[in-house]
Image (cartoon, rainbow, N blue to C red; front, side, top):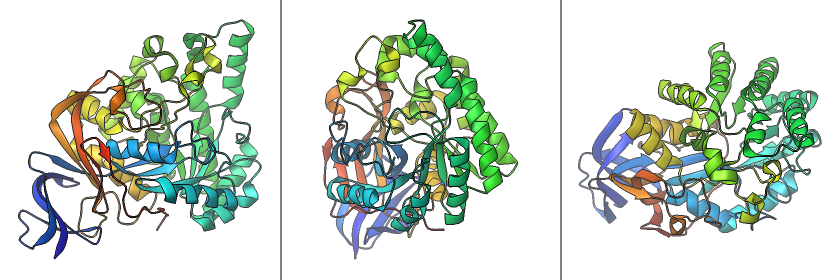
Amino acid sequence: MLDLIVRTGKLVTPEGVRQADLGIKDGQIAQIAPEISEPARQEVSAEGLHVLPGLIDVHVHFNEPGQAHWEGIATGSAALAAGGGTAFFDMPLNSLPCTLDAPSFDQKLAAMRASSHTDFALWGGLTPQNLERLPELALRGVIGFKAFMSNSGLPEFPHCDDGSLYEGMRIAARLGLPVAVHAESDALTAHFARQKQQQGQTTWRDYLDSRPVFTELEAIQRALLLAQETGCRLHIVHISSGAGVALAAEAKARGVDVSLETCPHYLAFTEEDLERLGALAKCAPPLRSGDQQTLLWNQVLQGLVDIIGSDHSPSPPEMKQGDDFFALWGGIAGVQSTLAVLLTEGWQARGLALEQIARLLATNPAQRFGLQGKGLLAEGYDADFALVDLQQTHTLKPQDLHQRHPISPYLGRRFVGVVRETWLRGQRVYALGKIEKPNEVRLLTRHL
């Protein structure tokens, strides 16, 4: 007997969209067939709904332990589930302590197991001060190492100079783990920011001018060269520009082992939106021009971008208030809206296929980071999926948000598609606006 049958949904698979029943047993997909005759303990109708693999968001900051007043695991993972997500990778900074050694990993792992509504993986930090601790983080089960090439804004997580990044990549290559880099030139962005601030120029436009596209390209080029020299698997996070994708994609075509991530906010907003949205849309790298966004969308459509992660980086509202744009917290709260952006700006507006959305948000993250049994609607895979109504639209309101602080640049935006339910290993974790706690959540580790 099956545990669950999801009836007559439109399943989004690599081979295309097809109507079928989904049979689930012991948390895994046991059968996919036009009509399953075997009895089940529970049946759910998905008639008229699309069934997508659960989103795997490889880039979030949930700020716990130590800074749960910024977000917290319970609210952050609830927002993820409300957006169709079933797993996230938490970044090693914006929590106290940062995940830089085995004890800090253990502390975060305990918090995750106590509070998360979904499965999760943990990034370990890579800084000039913890190179000797990388092996112990690998033994604990980090999914990879995250390094900043420019000032992180947090003294407890210093950025890597070239020598530290090179040595860290050598160690990561030996350990068989990827390194994710925030690719902006520290020397150049600090120089331009200092020039602006010394002249009292601190508006949103001045902030943009201090981080031009070429400061991202310079760092991407350096990271690619170091990855090529060390044999390290490289993941470039939040590429903001079409020019950045082009540079990394060219290296990938030459054989450099690199994956390319962009974020929904770079696809939904341009730099001109900063005048209207203010610090709600401040991020680093910053929003780019309409021309760069057009190029970026074309690259998404061509399959040059591998992964789209939210880079959910919230803060208390007061950290977004003030006259000096440089001093305001840079981070966008958007973990609940990733699928909505892709359906609206991608599927509806630009003809991005649903299969491609599933690849960007689930299949590619699972394959790149070696997540066994994740990211596909296929027999033998975990029963992680979202039921989505593509016939409906919704306008995002503060009361819709499950994150701690109901502020987001996406508020008031009309989106195509409504996530009706989200299921994690055959357990419903979200339905009709309400979060349900699963019996178990799991730490996801790399399997090759």
